[in-house]
Image 1: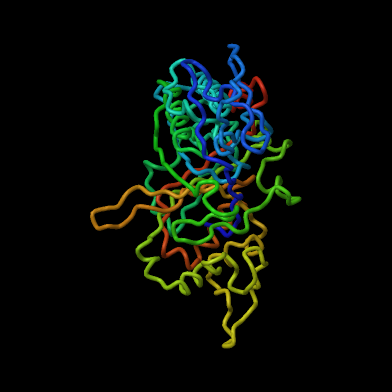
Image 2 (image 1 turned 90 degrees about the vertical axis):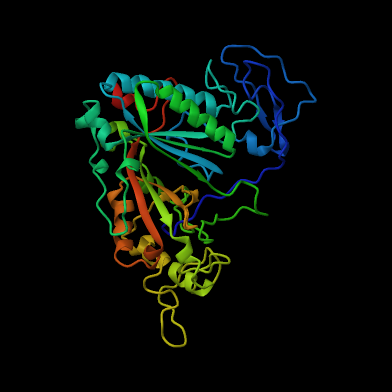
Length: 425
């Protein structure tokens, strides 16, 4: 849970539902202008013409109208802000399935993702789960695990950066819920839209691949606060104040594989580290607020560093109190995880919180589905985690229970499917 800022949430202008569409019609059918933004939402008719929407049709709220593009330089789900609902799912190729079957699967998945992200039905067998909703900023992202390359005879195309992560002292990893041949990240601002996508992706897998593990996450809903602000995690802390920003001159260099990078099929792609981090909330909540703040190195109320100022004020690592003690403790999480304390290492974090119930002792199984993006995981996640592993005050209150590392290629051009340059190159 490095000290890096989370993208700002969007604030909806209304919460009015969209009108129900007739059978076989896109769930986005000609809903006209959305709120005061002036965003036109024309029908994407999949080859079928539709009449213009009646003037009295209720527009989608800005929440439902949000749309991410499937085609582009980078895959969706990396640069977008935090989403209210997420699903992470890993698949293993079926016995006997290889490169040919994997290519056909990625072709199906890409076609389905493009339709769903446009607010259309998944296909002829659509479940209608999201029938009344707009695109809701749905994103679907695809990646390849280390084992995928041996299964498909593509070992020579496996990136060195995909070498397995080292062991860390806080790891208590469940192998059954780690890694996988293929990885899919789904995010949306609406829970039904997100589940609809999860179900469609699972059905598309058919006999080519089976689910290895699947996890569900959530974040604060857009518009839940009076103004956009950094989200809080289940410890009540503002989580991620120093996330790298696209406007920074070295952002692309740190987050994305360059167009001239190796292997060539990873151009404009990124590497996703996925960790299920359980928070030991009962232990954490026994601490006073002052003790919690010392663990993190920031005020709980507003995220400002203990050295003073506001959330965005640069932390003064040398400031001391009247007794000469460091105001920001030497083992504070925010101090240890800073890029300038780790050779400039940086990750773009897009996590989800999770809660998987309460056990017989009343202990919640809850925490963070940590997802971070970087051009090189050895220089990004591994560098920072090794530093945290050697003395982070937060370590005694968390436990890493599953892990995965996935190569996420660049976005698909129009007419391409994700991974085509790998599978057909």
